[in-house]
Image 1: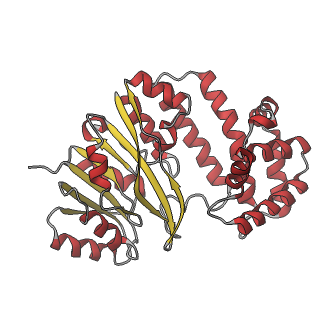
Image 2: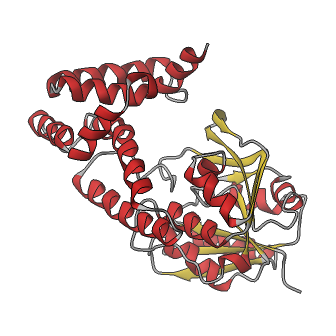
Length: 356
């Protein structure tokens, strides 16, 4: 008899955290599952750890392949998964003992259920994200919620902290040509096929903030190749949204908003220690962003009152159009973030103060 849930764990050089991840799955109060560990060409002791655990528990299956990235590993897991439901767990993360049972019991016929997650650095919880309890029945309602950026949107971005129905996934796979945003595209395509999804007010998935974290290692530094990759991701994502019936007006409006919000990360990452660019090159890149017609239009369209902290900084910088001042301003902001605490972040601190 096949297991109800297939737990897919991509593994790449995760020897430091892998045992904790596997132990957390094996300790679940819900026990009707199989674990698929995809050793994605690890060069450390990860493969031996997988073998050690597989000898102890017949529910653990090991698949070895040449290194191809996290999307390739997840796809390999999907290709052999036998469970009625799928959940993804990253090898440096871990889950609470009631994680699988809570998600399974809350399905109630849904095609997927999404829960919250907490970020953990060492033994310190730095951030907790928990959705409201919400059901989205019919694909029309799912599409409406996605379009309006409702509670559904932020919790159906990444693949973790969810339980998916295998039959709805079908032949859907992660886009292996992308190195960022492939999880967003996967979820868009899944939601396009789904007729009933849920979010639940529960947090049992722990994202460990390690240097090798799959989700964090992509966003450390600004560079041209990353920006090109981001643009390519946008084209693939927009193609998926068009297939779902989203029109050009929606996509263009969303792009304008993203340009303003993304500006903050772009400039801040340019000035991080170890940046490959000289101050002159950074000034030229800031000028180029300011001259982007979509960015210019977005800055004019939104008032300061309508924008978040990051958006206001982007609008101010663009209006002044003084790259030297922008660099100085972002250096001050970065220093303030360190003083206030990286876990909170200056923008979240500012927004909390504004709501009081």
